[in-house]
Image (cartoon, rainbow, N blue to C red; front, side, top):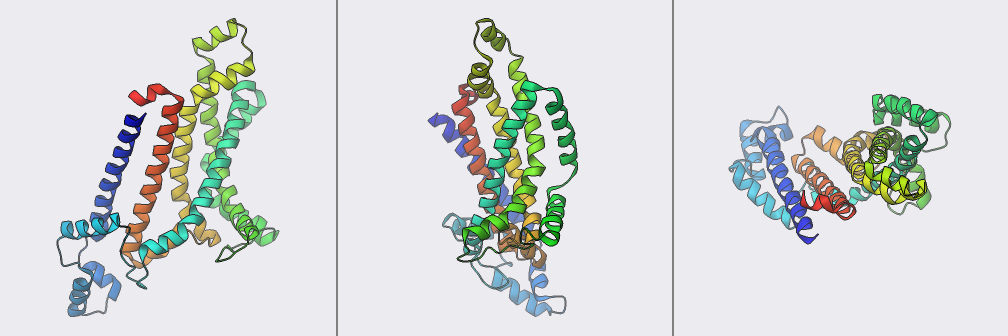
Length: 313
């Protein structure tokens, strides 16, 4: 298990390095044009060159990346070009909101997908047909559209929830619950149907195995077969689907946080991208990749613990 963990950890580090190099090259490839974007179209050439020198844009790209990577390893992602705030501090102050939002959504998605998927696989009938129909509808509606509809219906018209976030320094737990409810519901509704469908398929596949028929012939109860053998065999596929949903939610929250004005990573990334604040965008990319690598590592370790065959694959 230690060798399996080290292999997965090494693969995650390689992925992080490769993506950071690609992102850095793409964001800084325009050279001094970045300085003109900051100063505006009426800036003189001398002003643009002076700004480029100030930002270090006149140096070779590889040299700048190595300097940036060395500082990033020490936890320093530079400073914003608009306001001079530390990128690391800006991200760390907003990351908890995004992580609480996504973690709550993925836990609820996992629980609901497990219950609905197992019920559809075991009982079939109307539950199975309803799941298929709801999955088709939910797959066709993006999460941000669901968030907009919820805000209009439950916040603006009914007044049950705040239309914009009330989370801030020293905010009470009730403010967190009220502010996060609609975004969480939007993410869960968008993800639970397709996840439940995958759980259903994995459970049915396990029921069709010869080993399950053998267990039945030995008189083992259906409850024990389900809890001890079928769910254990279906868990790797279910965990993989949930990890993919988690990664998908990281993209979805960028828009949803903007809709309900949540002070998370999304509300930091959108204006930074519009302004061309490259250090902030680069920092958001790196932190997002780190979160994805950690989640994938945890899922791989859990899969390896549940299914020893995975460790040698």
